[in-house]
Image 1 (cartoon, rainbow, N blue to C red):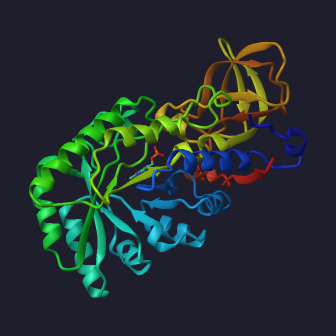
Image 2: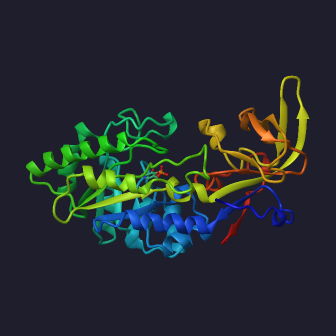
Length: 383
Ligand SMILES: *Cc1c(COP(=O)(O)O)cnc(C)c1O
């Protein structure tokens, strides 16, 4: 379990992100152990957290990178990832971003529409290069997760619909500067139930056999990311159940000779190793509520305001006090700037340090400067 060096925190300006690198290393080791199938390749979805200290560890562990923008490609290159270990998805790739990817010699463009395919072909032609692409398919599978992080339904903006796929496959194989190598899928995020992944495997099997019948063979099958984590009890499940996750694909996907499976894990790699540390500014007695007003807000951690997400809150300064109910709120001028309602927590006093747990993914990277606030700093523990 994560231990917090509270006495050291007193010297640091709050709020800040605190990363447990030993947990990150153990998580990466577990991914290596459970994804041991030589046909499996794991790419880290860098949008979850691009802190250079985190990226260096992930690069050293041998993972590739899944990027969704030119900025992310640059961040990955700067952290030492080789261009040919970077895959690039995104519905709206600009000409500049595509050119950056081509020049970096990235492993694969995950293409989301016909016009994008044509632009990549044209830009690759201008540079005298051939772009390796996978087509991102929208498999119309309900991931049973929050509407804002469901990406694989027909109504979502992502990917190519199954009905439109045959024409685009044909087009891709006819373009001179395109090498069609795979199919790409990503159905959503924070998926805690295995069934959507099983459904995804079945959909993929159906597609592969349909296309095999037409003489098309795909060398890579990219199944995206989405494995969820335990936000309610991070100390019980500090490392997600990668064994079950990878076994689902091992047992359900019907691969042919030489086919590879690519995974793009973001949240499950980094969420549990990060906490947002904040100091209590005031305890305010309302008419019906007691508020703990803290110095972190939606500017440092937007998930509660954006997705009604909940991060476990801990009082690090007095973990054993008598418990009371608090609404834990930030200082930002928005009513949604609230980390928890009626939280049962050990008595909170001004100056106490609170930890918002499981904040390593989609936390620091989503920080904003709304209300002219400075971006949060980060600190690392090796112990
Ligand atoms: C966000 C994203 C991922 C990672 O999702 P997680 O839920 O963080 O694992 C993977 N692939 C694509 C294309 C994405 O957009």
